[in-house]
Length: 420
Image 1 (cartoon, rainbow, N blue to C red):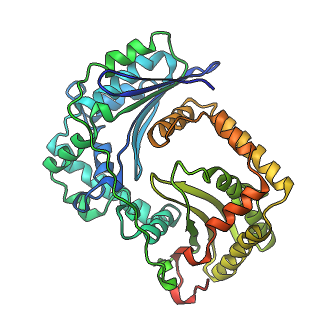
Image 2 (tube, one colour; image 1 turned 180 degrees about the vertical axis):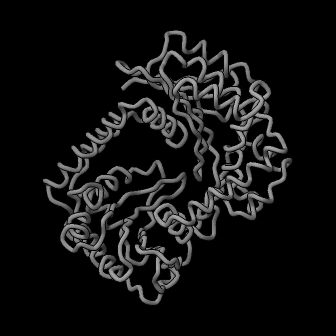
Image 3 (cartoon, one colour; image 1 turned 90 degrees about the horizontal axis):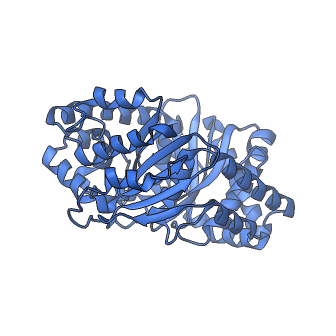
């Protein structure tokens, strides 16, 4: 899988990822900024800035003009904010690539942040936050990460709180935007079908913007919450028919070599319908409809997790069964067949996903932003192929430390009734 990387004179980084036999093209612009970069007073402002980029530019005066121009193309487009990055993308039939570049550059360089629009948009954002809080499936990640990283900005909700959003002042928001949204802090990825003059097109829309100053890139260090046992449990009481549970352990940052064997381990543990946890918790014990395991990485830390939805009365039985399956891997690793099946499962899933130009763009954007060097999907799969049963057991012993376990629950249950 080939890609081309270069920089514009103004410092913007560009990655071109051509794909044969596709008719779509995705343009993705990413900035290395998210909620963990925010001050206490401006919690959620990265997400707010993302919303405001769709509210009109000097050329396209309002939301309707801007979105209608994209909608008429039959395009897929959106933006997203995480704890460490913010992205904007448009995916179209490749013949409209010129329009995608024009619109995205206009949004990111020329959005007016009209005062009236800024006040108006606070309402929809507050409603978005309520939507997430009201949905335990969506909110359990927030509760768990707050428990794990509570003393630091890494543990905060990406969107901030209602109070913070309603209190934003325009000068402070613009100052924050300008601190991180310099062209020199931008990564431009184009993936899919593209013309021979793609570099000239990118230069036309992004190369003319002058670099103003070196964008800030410092992020706030993580801190773990208390390791006292009862403080490693958080229950958000809510009247629901089903409890959402997430348990996990501290793990590794983006660049840690341990991430590959941990990914294979999580595939065996809870990454498919034939995984250990799925068979044990759902098929044998009948405790949950959905259960899976996975991992999350940040610049300086990460975590491994298991999550499930189940009846609150079955919570302790499920926790005990999950920890038992984890302990089995720690004591005796996995079978040769499980390891071989996990590797082919991961290869197949990744290859299927990367048939899509937007998935290709996301892959290479994250590689460019967070890794010491860009790793292609083929290189990543080669690393997976080298994982051994001994690697799996070693990483299980390193990560699955009972004294580091955190458990978060949303549901109709009392904390004192949960045992681990």
